[in-house]
Length: 197
Length: 183
Image (cartoon, rainbow over all chains, first blue to last red; front, side, top):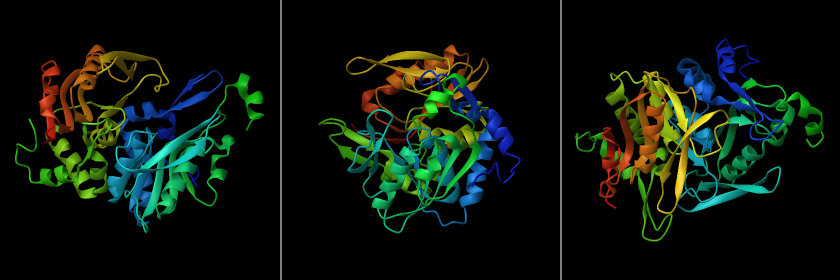
């Protein structure tokens, strides 16, 4: 599900506002930089409005945002729909008692944490991040929220990289995005990078 | 300058929603946890509204938020004011060309980065973070914005720890806060 497929006229400006930075964080990767979207108040507002319109009648009680760029988009959505905002953070940032979920990186693992008590059984949750790539982080977020007893209504991102098949890793959880992007790799890297997908 | 001194009735609910966690990140520290404020939609909305009311007629063109909790409050303020939002980040997070400013920690130094071109000559800036302690990070943020040619109109935080005298480190820039706390 995506706003670009729905033909929403606001999406073109949003997509054009995203800057692609080659060779970041390492050679061969094309990084999708949303900071330029944040410099265009109308496009930034539109991106929030599209998501709020989609979710305002779905009885969402909590919006969970993934550190750190999920903190930029999640709170305005939460405020507009009258939901709690819950930050999902890297290890050792949250000061209170936490539950955590490990997830796999290209090399090694990382961990996502959530405060105990932030999400309760019966909560209806939306998970927000700026981008879905392999889906590993979103997957960890989903598990955390479900362990706390809440129902995941949907995941929402500004950008999806379809080639990385993150959507499939979310299982039965729906994903709504605004902009799809083409290959995450520069042309030189494309063929050998695909071999490890 | 603070909303608690202005006698704003919304502030009490905001202050009560902040949770104090002892001995974090290390023994003897009382950590001011704003995540519980975010679980109270009315109090969270009120905190944004108070800032927006204060700044809406000050021709703010850019709101700079300090990673990571400044990202929670800054964007909503920026959107309400029709201003740009600029994230100020720890090293190596921003993908494009950056300028950076070092600042002193208790042990060692750290660095704050901002994208080149995000802020321009003539921009009128508001700097946002959840809390001001010693003021070191806010000070670095102010320097970055001024180096890019912006005028820093004010700094805004939810919480101030007056005992740590951060306010004095802001080089004369005004500071507006909602809640004062003891150490």
